[in-house]
Length: 150
Image (cartoon, rainbow, N blue to C red):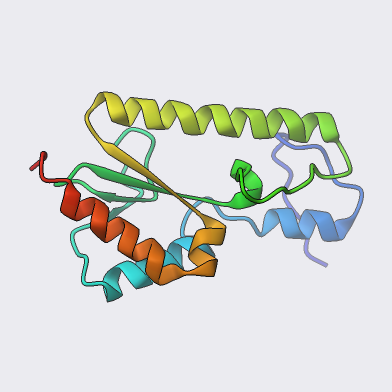
């Protein structure tokens, strides 16, 4: 049986299955990001960078010449306004605070980039899953409209 490493940031789940699911979550190169990158390439868009360290907020995808930052948000973790995910049943106070911090961090990243004249796009997980072509078109249209930079 695999032992899951605890880093002290989250309470210990009561069920091993919960721990297993939570441990499988990744910070970058997530399923929705991979799908969006595939459709961005398919649309002929080139010149993007993935999670660059030198850009505030480390957007998931960025077009540095056009100053466009793209955040691919998981609906559960970033509390999508269209998807009404309930709070986890256990440790409701912890999760409520965690999600508030996530949303505050998202806003801080967006404001930091906008102060530097970056256009910030947020693409939600469900938008990519529902219609990845439309999500890629949204990126392409944003690049075309971004003539005031570069």
